[in-house]
Length: 529
Image (cartoon, rainbow, N blue to C red; front, side, top):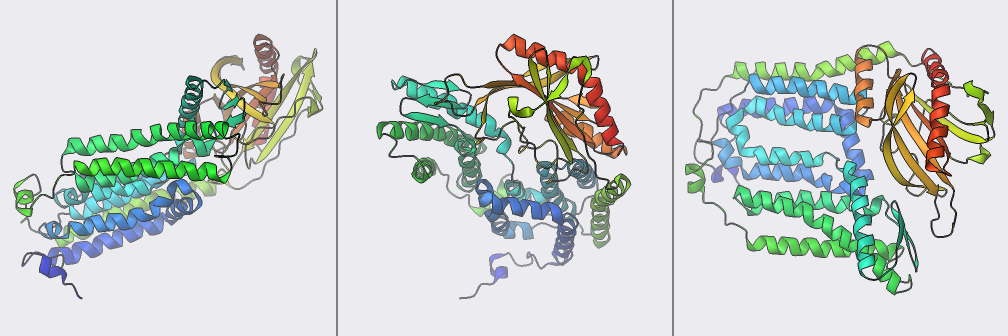
């Protein structure tokens, strides 16, 4: 069986018509040029798809986008491509600069969103707005290829713990909870990343958005179903977590633990999604006949003249704009060099603080791949304070200060678990700054009556500027790199045993007040290496 595309198109209106013979090659060349220039960003996206089960579905996004565009081929052929200079080129200049900022501070989400945006803008620049409108949803759906969304994981984990504990208590099961860990008579549980439900949420949102587009024509129905595809998996994950804990509790921990824990979770999620789509299909709207499309809001066939000169001028300008960030990046990297650094912990500090063996406080923050680091303990008047400094230079996607992988305590840490966090104003170097405050407890909640506890304060040092915000740290780092001052950054973490809250805070404040100047001088000397 053979097919002939032109049979499906009105005579004289095919994608092989004269304007399209020039516009399509120009568009394909421009897309290939963008992908070539930003191949590292594209490869990073695909690597995440392959590595993370949360984003494996993204492999299907490009072919789905191509299929969605193919469905519009007849209406596309009725349009005459109208290359545009204005908005498209102005927008791509901003997006390209955004990519540069994102790459300077190694933020995958920014660079990958920028790459997809440049590809979308290439379509707009070459084909014009009237034609692009016809494939606006496929172009928007392409953003689901960007592996983002895990930033909501901490909040989802907290909500899951809240719902599970509340459900257990309503069911008559006594619960003792600290942070994301809780204990019931049959054992202890912890809400980890896999329990957050972020995989369910992202998968449901992707499929739900496509389902809404294909089955509804009303904007209200589409938006409503997309909202349902967000809310349902979140609530379903809460119910899944509660049922797994209850099933394990009622079975004496013979069911819903280990591998079957995950199996039950995915089976329940699959059932919920199937029900959601089964209900949603009942309100599906029939396909709109072509005559109604032609008389509706769809762009009318264009009859404007087509300019080959303008087409290739737009293509050349676009190609030149997207190469500028690559040139700027090479200039910045060449100016910064590649000098290695080292940092040595001082034997004594101001205010009578002197170094002691760290066995008194066996703790080390989970910061990965620093250029240099120190983790020392200092004592005075019977109080011991730990000081961790992780120094980062020549940061990239494998070595960077601000990362979701850099935390005080990993979720499966055998020694410590984080039970609370907040922001706390501290006095350092004659100024008041916000620091991240967190309380840590011995990891095994069920077997320790008087578990050891630590109070920690964390501050970022970005080329001498202090902040506790991840976003501010990234912004400062990008600014300093753009202005030729490098990306020298560090995290400063002080910690002490928490016997009484006020006492621990006073000890840390006393230590920082007396010694921040010394710590800052140590970091400045390291920067000069």
